[in-house]
Image (spheres, rainbow, N blue to C red):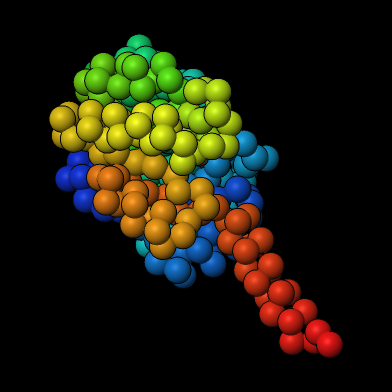
Length: 258
Ligand code: 3PY
Ligand code: MG
């Protein structure tokens, strides 16, 4: 099994930059891989990306560098197992609010004795050709990141981080802001304070703090790194498309004005 640089970066709390894919087409993975991201995460929670689309994205990434990650649709054994069996190098598990929910995510992602993941031939182990190697290495190579995106999760952050097998956490700023009654106000001091609390807990636990800088600017990325985040998603494919199109059209309109 190929060593997973993302899990190593998480454990070493080394900066590791990826982005988010909401368009489930291999071309998107191929184009974004050219940009040189460390990892690309398919969003299986808020999109039509299901198992078939994830496989297309993973095939688009094959041999190109970025590690394919997936934000699974929910914290369930089936959702986590399916994406790992299809070749995900790690799962980002949404809406984990307690240590018990974090334990459930880890159990789903790990082979026995640490977990309950079932053994089979699948894409992840090259349809059985690498069965023994994958079975021996998967627990040590596959990354498990849980999303902190509610007030309850912030209150339980120390217990969540104490769960063995949680490699790091990832803040979902939009859900987080919604849970504090401030939907979309991700820069509100209340949300910033909650984020700071999570980063401090990660520092104390020696685990990685991650965040999605959904609308990246040089300042917002610098701020995230300055705050102590190391596992950082910058942007979303749809935002890149929208921003690029808007700039191009504005330039064309300006050039043709008057
Ligand atoms: C959130 O902001 O809630 C997210 O899940 C972003 O990925
Ligand atoms: Mg969210």
